Image (cartoon, rainbow, N blue to C red):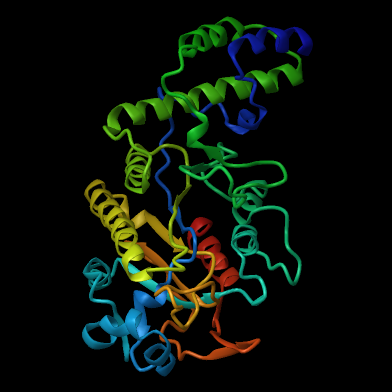
Length: 384
């Protein structure tokens, strides 16, 4: 059968000719599906600029005491000891509990060297591509390049990245391959049985190479949909908030679905006003979801093979503003969670330093975010 005739027939299926899914190989099916039990990475983006120094800070850093007295008062007076003079905000005991269980590691003072790029768009581009605007901003995502290089597992799946909530990110976009987006699938679509019958009908028909590629794209798109539908049916969660997405990631991992990298976004951290009030429910939701993930994966034996990386696009200003919030800043914290967190080559007890931009003092970063990506890649994703 020739490509034109094949496409004419396949377009009757309501948009299943998605060539992006052609990279999914035939092994990915709900029946007799090969199990993937290797190391997994969950990337959590706290979008907006989560102020990490309200969670963990050096209690003797004078500029905090001077410039953000209201935001900093609880940490300075009643903070729970972390290391040396650094204290965890007592408003978030769930963070201290994770640290005490050795399930959470801070990466303080992380950032990028282009301090003039503090817009959400520029900062997001840098974090997602793993490159810097002021040097050479790449057009592909840092995980997308791993897809192109076929360095992720399982090898029979060329797109082992599953995005749960953010279709706009480019971190997974390579030149040849891209990740799979959960939200592209409709588990209740009424053409499911039609597609199944159609695939059976064309299974034994000889196809030219181009038509065969399209056929494989349709077939694997359908099989991924089946996997997602089966997980939806067992999740019991219909909402699309952060906790719901984390529940689905948990079920994907426990079901050994063929994805090595998961990505989820939590919104709301651009706290220009009333930061203390706005941050509390968001941070509680974030670490509650991560604690539940820890408990569930410990119970299933997956926690030691799972690593969570939490980042946000930039930090906040040292000073609080007139609205009891903070503005876009520079250095910040990132977070690693897991049962076997790789050894960090960074100094995780930093001495805070500042840099002058215009007439304003900002925190100077010590850890380049690209070095963390190297750690995640070489010490976790591709480490045998």
